[in-house]
Image 1: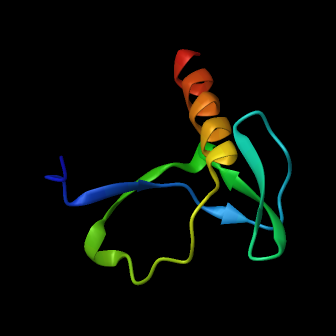
Image 2 (image 1 turned 135 degrees about the horizontal axis):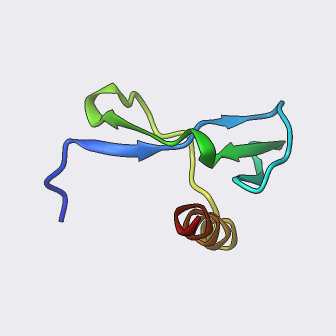
Length: 72
């Protein structure tokens, strides 16, 4: 099912502060945070190139964090 022309993205930063809605990860030899409190929808045409992927352990943490955010 790939009918939408938009995707949800969460920005990443190497600066900032920890919060319940932010997930820490290692990406390209840097420690950073995924800012799930800043989710946004963007048109796929705005995406230029894929920078990498998130490992399955981090994906599970992201999923459970999103569930807890939306349960509030």
